[in-house]
Image (cartoon, helix red, strand yellow):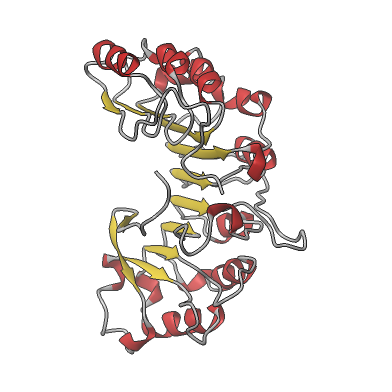
Length: 314
């Protein structure tokens, strides 16, 4: 569904909002017991550098295991570059960091396709022990600067990677699939729509679906897309799918034509299709064909509606 609420858990830890009036390292929870949410308060009189300085002064960062970065601007939206710069510069202060969520922002704070991203490659190179990375947003600024980018990387420990966007650049998909990620178990792309910058092609995804990449991969999400029927057919026939435990085609415009291609995936443990355009009959066919699969068919939209939309677009 649309991003209307902040997450309450990340990387297996409850999310705790940092506020600089916690004052001392002993005032808040144990640093390793929570995922620390660091953000700039609207009209709070501080920029990200000031909030970050307060956080790193008040919390024993050597024990922090997970970070959640919320809004990084005070009033006018701005590129995420200062956040990436701060995280990279202080990497040595976070030797235990294993989970990072960049851009945990609701649509009331900023629409997903207005979030001004930049190159996130330095985060993976600065944190070689990171096991989970989530990035939300893809756009650049209004002058054409920035925009979500990734260079192919080698990372030995990353187990979960998710890009959430209203329109994922094909360049990012290709960079992920050109990376060496031997430990990767979960990969999720929110593909989005061409109206908001999605530029991936079937050819971009072909190396992934071939099963030749990422030997540890067990969960795949191709989500929030306008072409879910075609993706469902491709995934159902893909060599990769035979070794998956979990598959998600959620948040998009899946119809009966796409869901019927999935009826033979009885080996899956989980199949997530929430936010879809399936008829009641198609939903029943899935339940009957996949009795041992944990199936999420929540968020049904009207299958007769000619105007179909992804859950997270603008």
